[in-house]
Image (tube, rainbow, N blue to C red; front, side, top):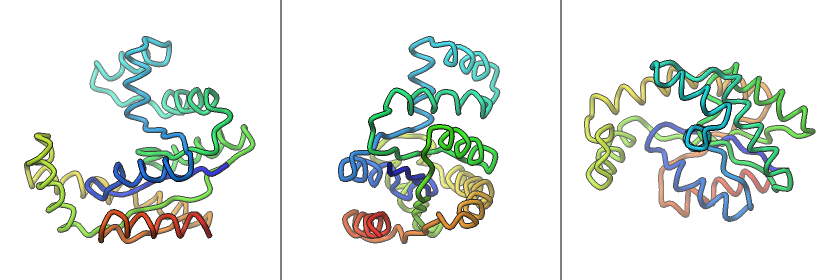
Length: 189
């Protein structure tokens, strides 16, 4: 089973590349944002618990998020693997994910991190903001805060996966196909 954590700051191209990786390797896409929205919309027990917290402006606890991910993993037991997008975001989440996957006889194979310098990210996000209409992609100050937040929160995760010899930094600059080729070269090794 091929299990990948796809990582990178806002604007690094995770969405574009995850679609291509899913198609090439027949992976199931696990986006915590999508899962949360689906569980809330479906009014599942976990979804109702999450909604109650979100309505109070609180973060959904790791145990609830891991429960939702486990439910998706179980529902796709025949999958060739999973691509984790937007999760884990902390070392505690990575440890919980490892424990859950281990209980199912599998593990994370690698963390692929799209590496793009901050100025390039700002340029990409401002351009995306013109096309998408997303307000968070139209304000350079907000973009800089998001990038700073990403950099400060995710540095420990890079260390965590480096310690397991699973971290792979991939230059995220070039054409979509050039970047995709670099990702595939890492996976196919």
